Length: 304
Image 1: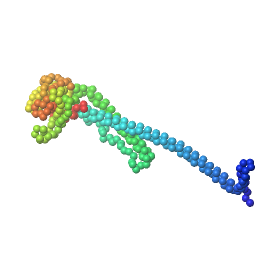
Image 2: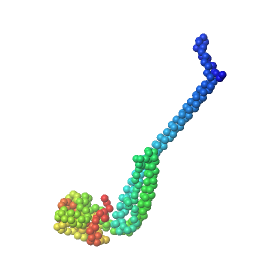
Image 3: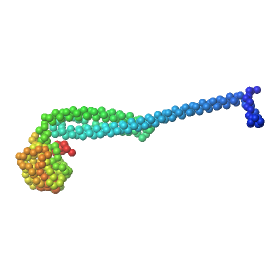
Image 4: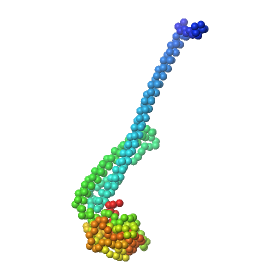
């Protein structure tokens, strides 16, 4: 016979007594099941504890990743802003080189330098896409910074060259028509256009700057008044000889306040805007001639 455990249950001291017999094997199996259940419970509890720890770490890393991504994006905007500033410096450098005849000197990288663009594909998983985006942005920034450093170095070399040239060419600079003769808006540019009078194609040898009647017309550079006159085309006009083969002309004035042979300085009042001669309204016709040949005034103007 198999061994058994006897369990006696009694309700109070005088109560009815009940007796149960349980085989030892059943008890052992029950204890084994209970122990296994306890171990399973402990394992699950530990696993859940570890999961919670990892989830907290994942949340922390996700938050850190978001902060780093925002910092990278802000830095990318700074790089883009610096790129824009450098592009404006390069444009300014180019104008200075044209003015100083140094256009064939040190060349500065232009806006053709490709700066990276891009982002994660919609087909990537979220985590993979975030990782690719961050790594791509880092690679892009690194590449952009290398290009900017190269351009900035070239620009620095170029400005050093220009600085040395300017120190030797101060007279030429003060005689170069680098400012607007009047404030207004350009209604007709340099080059071919349709004549407002004949409707035929013609070559316009200067800029028409429309503005209010009697607005000031000033000298764009130092020079000597070489001619003050009136004709049917330009009306009241004045010509300034700036030396170095540079002559400027200003037409359609209502009044001229300088005289032939007078020395003028950049910014000095020459005349007042009018509509004399062949004109459709108040404006100044502004020409720049180099050795007698009309050139685009924009070539010299430095101010916006």
